[in-house]
Length: 113
Image: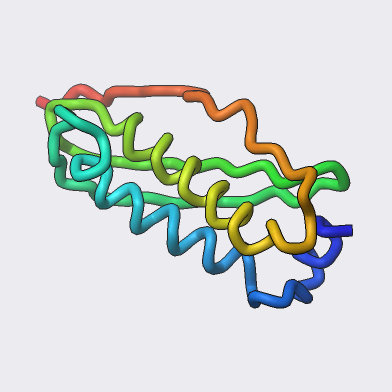
């Protein structure tokens, strides 16, 4: 029922996925403030996308930077905060929600000359 309310944009607190997307992108930008010893990097792009399925919501984030260090922590932070935002906005109506399987799917590095 909660997934259908989210899909139909009928949750009491508003547009859950839009708020979660903004939360995820904002969180990615603050990763170095949230995770001790994590470098502050110049982020070129962060996206947060959702696949609403019958049994839950899949969240994927993609992040790009040209810094020397990786940007995987920013992408993982984006997914984590998007999931927490969905949980927060829906918790009053659904006590059975679970956040699970947050993981890095791929990391690539383009060499520059």
